[in-house]
Each structure stands twice: as C-alpha cells, then as structure tokens.
Image (cartoon, rainbow over all chains, first blue to last red; front, side, top):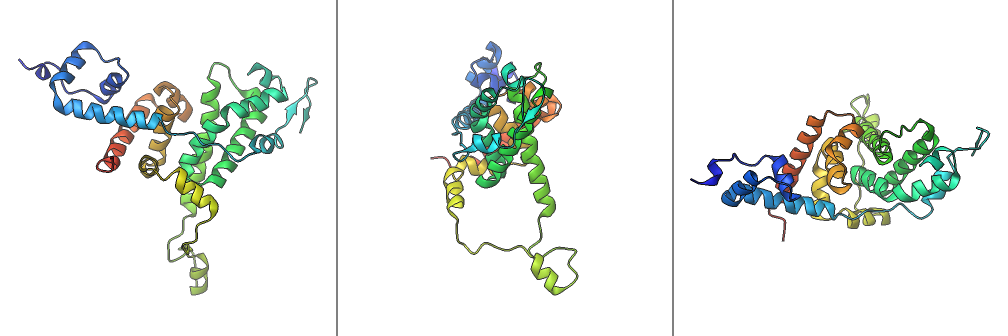
Length: 82
Length: 185
C-alpha cells in the first residue's frame, strides 16, 4: 500500500518541521511517496532560505549620536541628565 | 542589560549598536522609505532607552524592542492610510481650487538619490514580494524568517493569539510563493 494513504498531506507546520530537519518518521515517509507534498515542501524550504538570507540594512552614519541626543541618562542619584 | 537599566551611558550606546541594524531593517522593510525608517528607528530607541526602567526582564529584550519598532511602523502605515488622498483630491474639498490643492501630486519621474538607494536595496523580487503583503503579514514573516523569532515570541510582541500568528505566517508564505512563482531563475 502506498505510504501517502497512511499519512494525510503534510500541514504547513509539518513542512516547516521538515525544513528544519525535525519531521517525524511517518511524515518523512509520506513525503518520500507524495510528489505533491514534496514539491510544496521544496518551495517552502527555498522561500524560508531566501528570507533568512536577506541582508540587514543600517541607518546613516551618526545614528547613535542622534539617538543619544534625545535620551535622558539617569544618574546614580536618580536624576536625569540629557 | 542590567547596566543599561542602571543608566550607564556606555551600556545605552552598546544597546543601540547591537540592535540598530535589525531594528532599522525591520522598519525599513515595513515602510520602504529610508528617511522615514531612520526617523522611526530613532523614535524606537529613544522610547526604549527613556523607558528602560519599565523593562520587565521576564521578557526577552529583543522582543520588547521589536514590539516598539513594529508598533511605530504599523502606526505610521495606519496614519498614512488615513491621510491618503484620492487622485481627485480630498473628499472634504468644497471648491475646484481645494480639490486641486489636495489632489495627489504624481511624481514627475525625477528620482532622488535616496529613492535610488531604496530601489537598489529593496528592488529584488523577494523584497518586492514582501512589500505586497499586508502589514500584519509582513511583520510576522519578517520577525519569523528574517529575525528568527519563535511563534510564541511573535505572539507576545504583536499582542496576537498564537494561532493568529501561525495563520498569518502560513498565509504570508503562501502569498510569497505565489508572487515569486515564475519569476525565479
């Protein structure tokens, strides 16, 4: 009997587990037999990988100084200094 | 973190240094305008540092700062939507002159240097696909897959039930796959 009949199609949660290498044996067996789930899982893995590889952008030079100019730093006495 | 809570200026600076890129990146991807993202990121850090004594250590600091950053971005997007005028001008305009004065000014085609930077930075297929998501989905997908937060942390940050966060992320991934279908090499 075909394994895909023993386990329903993978849920989004299961596909995410698979992409992380955490999917249980029953799900993995289903994936090995079910082309529909495999295609969806591969697309999902590619998307998640692409998202994780997006670059981080930085603000313009001097950002910290611009922030600190508006921050009230508490002194040990409990007062604030700008 | 404890140093920062005690008001040590070097600790404040270190917190800004550590989080400026992730916070700025999240806001920038939400509002897609460099200058505005910088203003909102600055507002976020000022709020965080001036309110550091209200920080509750049972929560992750990153969750707290991303919550404030996301709120700043979402609030801006909501205000912008309220302020959006039709091409024909404000519905409250009474005269032709008022209609014209309040009509949306279409860009003449000239691109500022900052617009060019934004186009370069956010111009890839995947960035454009992210921009097409509704803001709630965009926040969730960025916090989950770009910043690497757990579903539980995101639910806490966005004050949403866990099930809603999962639904938003699944829908966002479906939409992204749809937008990217056929455009991949």
